[in-house]
Image (cartoon, rainbow, N blue to C red):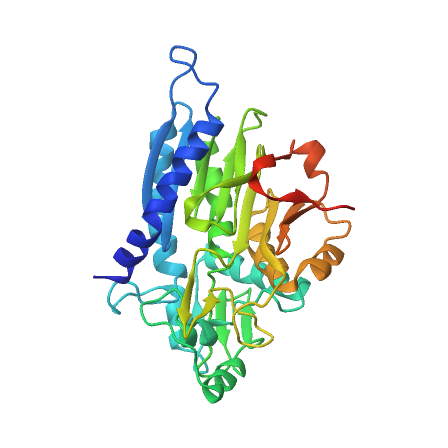
Length: 357
């Protein structure tokens, strides 16, 4: 069985439950005859389940174009060999030629790499696309995850943190040291959400959403669109602890509750800390960022999760977007006017509570 089939079987049940929940919550006001029903579809791309729910005359055409883009970006931006090892792709080529020569890349890839460097600097390196040697070593989302030996971990860690050279004039990317690897898993889906948004609007989609893994891209400005915040302690059951409006925004959530492995009775989540090389040790159960900028939301949710509650709240002071942090004591911390502007509503029966300011 291929890696893609393994991931699909692992996440399809939870995604299907979540899709049913979101669709019923979002479109509960729809009545036959009042409006054309949405175009809906569930597929698999970029190593995750993709859900479409789109309104508008060009919804089906938009979804088809989105599928084409996802297939293209999966090929170009993925660092792993998910179809048997004979693929081409820009990120794989950058990794293959690390320490040897620069690689000419597409406009989309160059823009993403440039944006990733900016976000890495802003987060003090907690978001780091050069973390590839560590993700390859742990293989947490692969078929053979295991805890590495100390020497292996130190060697991989020494290859991260810097060394990516971008040349805007020649539009090339170069990793300076042999053995370095890019891994765009913490930003590519969020960046892609912004591209999907453009496709939808260009095709006349008036409202709806596309769910891409831990990223929810919402179209339109209707206040009727409400989404649920997943319970990070129940993961695949897709239970909800709060709901809010996401009109015109993208929400990205980072947490360790869906992708992980266990060894010797210890659970290791897929989010690696670039400071230590180990899976995240944090007092947060999940970190969500809500912004029109999908790349920012995706990358920053990972960085905030690694920071932990106190550092994350300090980091978020005076930022022009929203964040929702859920800590290990089942408290929910809101950053920005989430309660007022997004009509944030706690599910009282969830067992969670709002944090005191």
